[in-house]
Length: 95
Image 1 (cartoon, one colour):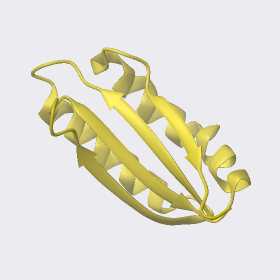
Image 2 (cartoon, one colour):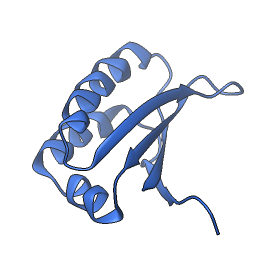
Image 3 (tube, helix red, strand yellow):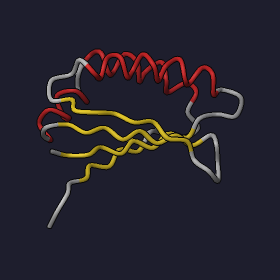
Image 4 (cartoon, one colour):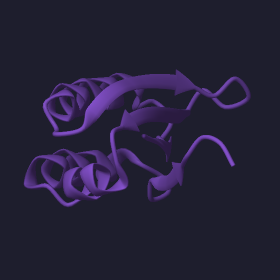
């Protein structure tokens, strides 16, 4: 199992637009092969920073989803309200 951390910096005043895109993204992600769970968090210091934690069965499952037309479509819409490109970090448990 892996955890994917996605960091997004949204433009001021675009929170409701982002939330609509995020809902669509979550609905699509839930159907992705290997999806286990997802969680969305807001930055305390900067409420325009959003963090998404996604648990996937494998790195291969994540890479398949990352390259999927469904994800690319929603991310292309989302990119217009981001002030920085999304940052994706892959994490694993243990030693």
